[in-house]
Figure 1 (tube, rainbow, N blue to C red):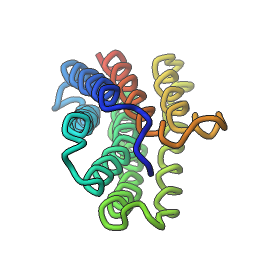
Figure 2 (figure 1 turned 90 degrees about the vertical axis):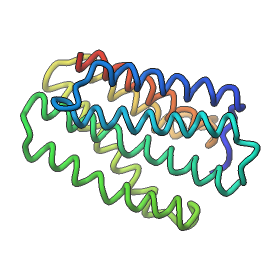
Figure 3 (figure 1 turned 135 degrees about the vertical axis):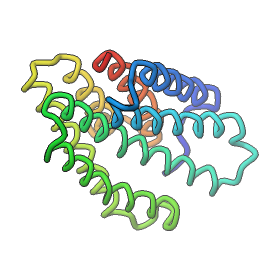
Length: 201
């Protein structure tokens, strides 16, 4: 992956927006009753803090350190919040059952492989990891859209469509550049957390 097109100033704004929306969503959540969504917001906030540090101090760190931080944060934002949000929404509707546990169990293998690929292999020869990341995100988007259709909940539908657009916009628009991926996932995650705050309030 190459560095995104956005400048340090734009990256600072995007990550500041992500930090703000994840923090505001956490204010509406209870750690005891909405644990999964709370942890998803914590992950988003942590990724935003790392992104803010990269925007502020990016020129003083090594290229390897910057690329590892970018890859880990992007992987965490793609793989962790959406399954946790699905777990929270399904638990809210159906109780803690097999569907919730399946979302949690299916989160771990892609996450561990993605972390290994980012930290050890420096994103080289990671075709299996990329495939698992794509399948995990697509499965969670379909799961959220299914719940939205089942519950006739337009807000859930918007959340699913936002993540679908964020993940697959470069595929749909041939002119999109690969570098837009990080900026899209940060902005899309910010919008997802904003909607989550309204969905669970």
